[in-house]
Structure formats: C-alpha cells, structure tokens
Length: 454
Image (cartoon, rainbow, N blue to C red; front, side):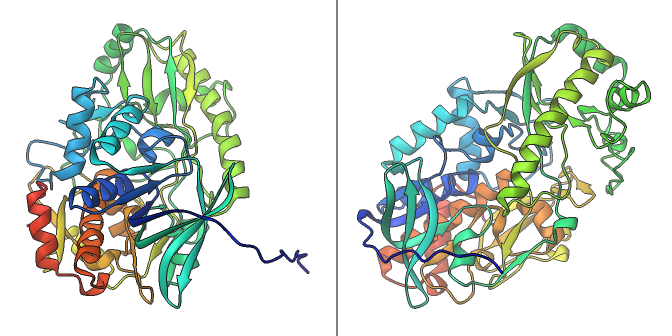
C-alpha cells in the first residue's frame, strides 16, 4: 500500500495575469511566444531552467536544421530567424554535413534573451509547472513552484510546450505514451576541448563516413537509398576498437554517433554519442539513472577517442548539457493525428499552419529531404480533445510513430509553435474558442510573419 500525506487547503497568490501563457521555451515554445506577441497580445513565457531555448540550450543539441540540402523546401518563419539571428550575433557556425548553421548552445541563450526582450514578452524563468487551474474543462492558468514557493499564473489561453504534454495530461486530455521499451533512446550531450582540428579533419578526410555506416553494430537504419553514399560526421570505429582492445567495457556497444562542429580553438561541440535505451522522460527516477549513466558513458567515449581518433589524443571534457535529452514520451491524441502515410507522402491539409521537409529521423528510419518533397502541418494536430483554452505544441503534437520521427525535430517544433502562438493570439483577440478560431485569419497572419504554409 502506498503511503500518502494529506496536505491542508491553502490560498495560492496570483502573481501574474496574461493573455497567452506559454509553458516551456524550447524551439516550439519560444516560437509560439514570439509569434503570439508579434500578433499583438500580451504574452508570458515560462521555463523551469534559467534560460530559454530548451533542447538547443539546456540539452546542447546544436544541429538545428542538419537535414538541409539544395532541394530542401522549408517553412521559413521563426525557425529560419533562429539561425539568422544566431549568425548575426556570432552564435552559429556552418554545419558539418548540410547547408545549415549549427547553433552555439551557450550563445543561443543570449539570442533567445534578445528575441524575447524585443518582442515585449514577459519572461518567467526558474518556475516549474505543477498543476493546471481549471473551470470545468477549461484551463484558466497554472500553478508553479519555485524558490518563491507556490504561485498562480492566470491566462486567457495556455500553450503546453513542455515536450511531454504535461499540462494536457493533467487536464485529462487523452494522451498516448510510447512503451518504455520502444522509446527512442535518450542522450546526454557533451562538448570536448583539446582537439587538434587540423589532425582531426585530416583523419576524417582519410576515412570519410556515410549514412550507410549508421547501419553497423547495434543499429540498422532504413533509408530511401539516396542517403547511403552521402557524407555523415559519424564516429563508430573508435568505440568498436576500444571494446575489442578492452579499453572500454564490452557492454557499451551503443556508444557511437555524430560529432557537431570542430573549432580552431580545439573545442568540438554537440557530441551526440551516448544513446540510452529504456529511459522514461516522464519518470524522474529513470531520468536520474540516465543522467548518471550517460555522464559515465561520455567519459568512456572520450577515453576511446583519446586512444583511437587522430587529433583527439589530448581531448578532454569541456561540459555536459544542463539536462538529459529526451526524444520520445507522450503525445496528445489530437483532433487529427499525423500518419505515417502523410509523413512519407507529402500530406496536405486545409488547416495547414506551415510545412516541413521530408525529414524522418527515428525508430530506425533516416530519410533526408534532398528532392524537394515536404508535408504540411495541420493545426488540428495541436488541439487536445476534451480541453478548452489549451494548445499543445513541440514534440507532443498528435501523430503516430513515424510522424513523431519527423515532427519531434527542432525545426518542425518551431513551425508548429509559430502556428500555435498565432492561433492563441487570434483566439484571444476575437474571443473565440481555439477549436473554432478562423483558420484563414491564422494563415494570413502566418504569411505576414514570413511563413510558407503551402
């Protein structure tokens, strides 16, 4: 029998009231807040960490649009602006395997600060969402906890950008959670220093890796065939050799993956080498195990790089991301759930709020957008069932597994977020429900904000 304690009833102070409240400031939440503010309403952006940017800044995933090639067709809008502003502020470098720019995870904190400030958004960092405030099935705000205790924030519309559909779940909206044994692996990202860039790059050129090399050891990756001969900044051989030589333990056969940017300073960032199966991003005990194990595996990976990778003989840890990277937990059962067929075959929707190139990365599938194909993102996939006043954006939008392998990616989260922010803003201004908002007006404002929707 589980022990419980009975908490006394209490009055919670209302510390802030806003038109649109965005909870979570990753690519989806940040885009939502900016879009809503630019559409002319009061916006508050709340995050549990001390910076905005989510996966980019707190996890350290710098490859925002690493799928981009000559024929790639994209929505533009705020996602494109993230890259352009980062470039102008010295917080981006050319990406190693594509035509995009890699966002500096530390520098982007400043980029996000500037964007939020310029848009007139009310920032609320260091506060954690703990419960919704409701009137029947309508959400009217949230309860947060922080060093200041327990507080209430009221809003006319709320956007759940938590990544795990936390608010929708607590409001009783139907959600679908991937079984833990089927979840995409979690990752502890890290950056290293002490790399001899010239020697490392000479080694890469002497033994170039392709996406076909991803299908080695523990992974078998389905491609469309056109990806197989394309260059990939992939590292696997050093870790296999380290296991064979007894340098690292044999059970660490899942270490391997991509490196990000290598700098003249000797820093190499966005080391996406640690992949942890069975980590549930909605379970703090599971995440605790993942953080500790992930850091330990990262140090083993560095040991193997020291021994077997030219230019990395003196490499050392520079830093870890602030938190473990989670790819896969809950999604809402939305008014429309994007299907595998729509993802693979250029789905089209009357309520499109943006487009996303044919990029699928997850569940053993890798397809890169090199032929100009793209799908549209439906507004309805952000509408949870049975709840009023709430939109869900980011990686928790409605869709099946293959759809998630596309829409979970940060650039797609930004596309969905911009649509959610505008819809919430226009819903407030017209005093209409989110499920009856004028989609033509939403699309008109999206176009005004520089988004390609068709």
